[in-house]
Image (cartoon, rainbow, N blue to C red):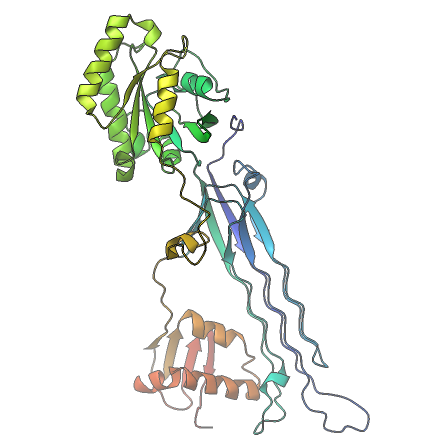
Length: 438
């Protein structure tokens, strides 16, 4: 199984959920019914923008051609209690291994299994029609709510390959040749550095198990700091469960294998300390270029250097030497997939989550400040969205808004700052006078 010729690791897209429809201001108009009462319907909810993990995709190529996405808008309410239609949800397919970051607040979603879904932009709620506000003390409300706009944001998509085993090493260490012999993949192979410029996947089948093996492009010194394509290459290793460090027994450039080993291990640890903790298998490659005595000596030296916890296998992709031993070590050392057939009520809570979410703490409150002699400003997402629902030139709507502000504590907070009836209040860029005593 070979990777596609182009692997696009990152994409930046703009998404906009549908706005909610407006509620309707309407009264029944029927013959012989002089006071029919309010009958305005509600506006429909705007459509969400949803990312769906689809295992038929392998890269982010599609987002190079289109980067703006918009869901459907909710319909407006109408008279006779006819409610607006909800906007259509927009589904955007992404490949497994996609990490999604919402740029405004840094919330991240980790999509790794086919079928996982995450709402990245929620549709705006529809406004309520005037029928919703009718009651014993206010039987003819002459206002309705506006629908609110849907979420709108930039989203960064970062694709990290899903592989059980990652082959790491310096350029031209022999990783591509090993992958082609161990699996059905056909990576580009040649005797010069940087043959592999993109990760390549292959499937290793042994003992009724399948392991996905990734040939990670060669690392260079400084990769963890971004040298070359370091960040892109190293990111692909983060999801692997086992690393095979491939070391050339006889480098073409005459470099010291021990120094080459130290370079790769240092770059892995500096990129992410968790990589240093992954289990390792050590493969000494290109053994056909040295005699048997040199192979055995190198094997013994590296076993002593690395300790008993790291298997050392001498390999040759040309002659096939050590490939069966390496396969056995990979199957033995690669941790098995977590069991997925547990009953839901027996599974630990963390395994029941549809996907991993990393969300920073949110500020759900509001802030009141005095900015002039008789001018006050109130800020906060919730209270700003509340203001957007009403026509403040409508006396009925303004009176209802004042009651809502009193109910959530904004009026009390204003009065604590010295607010008096008739002072100007600014919320969400809208300035108006409040007189809660009316």
